[in-house]
Image (cartoon, rainbow, N blue to C red; front, side, top):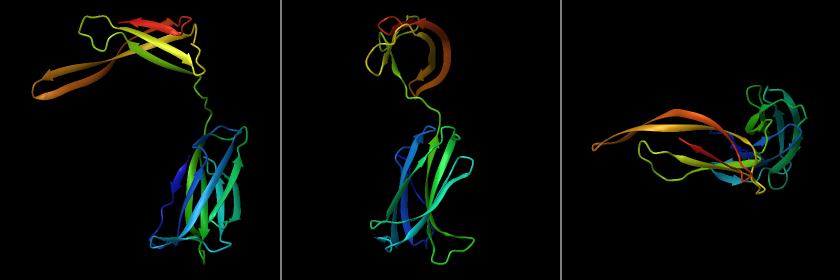
Length: 205
């Protein structure tokens, strides 16, 4: 859930939160948002006056205005809405801005502003999980390390026949009685393999 409290000046008469139902969306999905506003008199909170209006503006990652509307807070000082993203919506971070207008707005200041950002991206949920397990927890120099890699789909079945590429990372250690071991991670050999019907692949170094 995306959530952010606005930065307020010492004299701002309101506090508020704006949030979305998720932090990231794909083009074509619908963004649901909600705003909660309270009057703030030196940390003494109360409901806004009945009929208090707010201006809600939504912009895409390029600053293009997608929606702007004037809404009225309900009896609990909240308002909400939704934005249906186009199938070809631009990718990036979008912003929802909620402004409670001042009694006498000026060009320099419209009112107290609150907002939240959310991301629009082309992403795919992972289809399977990969884990790796060595045959022993510790080795000494010169010994062979055998590793079993297991891949399972999230519905439980193993990933069969998939190609495997592996990279081994090592850390060089120096030791003395007066200091802790110092690590210097470096990349070591790489390799490939093929998963068996069980979804497993083995590698040796």
